[in-house]
Length: 250
Length: 250
Ligand SMILES: O=c1ccn([C@@H]2O[C@H](COP(=O)(O)OP(=O)(O)O)[C@@H](O)[C@H]2O)c(=O)[nH]1
Ligand SMILES: O=c1ccn([C@@H]2O[C@H](COP(=O)(O)OP(=O)(O)O)[C@@H](O)[C@H]2O)c(=O)[nH]1
Ligand SMILES: [Mn+2]
Ligand SMILES: [Mn+2]
Image (cartoon, rainbow over all chains, first blue to last red):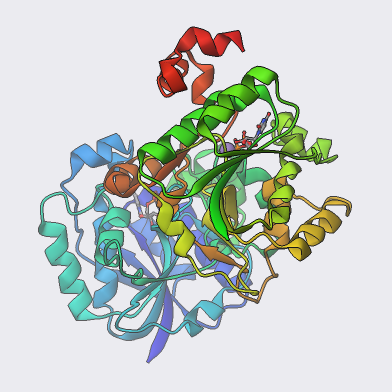
């Protein structure tokens, strides 16, 4: 069975991220399949995606109703990130590496497919820099598994299941096993999912470990493709060299 | 041989922190000795410390000359934090838990003395929330050891030994063993050294895990005792109930 990188696009406005992501993976020489799960996209987006992804899979939108938590997070647009649960239904793949559309690999990361998972440790992910005992849900290695799928669906229906209202809070709750037992997630090095932070300790460490970084993750509302410079940057990766204007037409 | 909590005071202006720290440890029922390493303190500070610490040990100041890095960190006042190296000379203690003066335990943490260290893993500490693959040097468990002491002194004399110019960069360099080998530090849960951060992921996780928190750490230039409210808070812990004015007299 095949292994795949999978990302997700629940809205057109993350398209530049998804295109840059696929381009980077290919330019870094991946040998794996590139898959994107889609919901509610325009035909233009679908066409663009078709040029860089091996497979587009339309899935149903799964929405969080924890609007209060999402509001406190200042990220109401994350209400559809529960759609990531669909990943565990992709049993046509033996193993997947999930990547957010705002994640940018800068070195080949195919070695992530070699990570051994087990019934006790069903997911591998990097620590979240806001609270390093939970994982950041922007990159993870996992095995599609229908029992995990139903477990996550069931959990998502419990009141206040996710502590941040989005997928990260839900998945950490599911793959966490409580105070005195070991974590049920395999801790990847932070270099696989580097999220810039404003803490004064970040910048010297960043300089020190910069050469080891495998992927950066543009978390937060200010995605690089929303600025003029970032747009130019992203569009240079477009199939056919599209450019700034092509993207604006979408 | 005895076990001790050890903190350090290289200047009078961190005194409120050191007093609150000792008070909290006692109120939380510690059975361990409380020790403070001092350099350059006023007589008034020494007297106050004498009322809450079991032992004051005057040590030599060890200074970092990496002013450029400290300047970039915006923390020039950390140039004397190399003085922490003196901890490994305290061979009168069989095991120490080092705590920064700006760290506030909120639950008894004596269980930290039960952590097993080894020649491969000579230190236990919690991840730094800016870069979670290094440890925060505000709390750690270690064994005094003269060979570690000289190793750290030797390393500190190499050019650019510390990537942040302070003790955290130096210690992480020393207790780190490079890319493909496991870390040489034992990872404590973040709840032992919780540093607030401005990332939007911090606050929901904080709420979720708040009840488990063992100690909070007021990193950065804005220490709680530098604000009027914080001053009041700190001074309520003073021996004899000292109060705001007593502290200002120092
Ligand atoms: O409006 C949206 C919000 C999210 N996403 C997808 O969900 C992921 C998670 O959201 P985001 O990366 O913004 O969360 P953050 O990493 O900032 O917490 C994105 O990378 C996209 O893959 C999307 O397609 N459209
Ligand atoms: O002027 C100073 C600076 C530091 N310290 C001691 O060194 C520790 C480390 O400094 P700080 O806590 O300010 O560093 P941060 O945790 O903010 O990185 C302090 O907690 C004190 O114990 C001190 O006594 N005086
Ligand atoms: Mn993201
Ligand atoms: Mn500190």
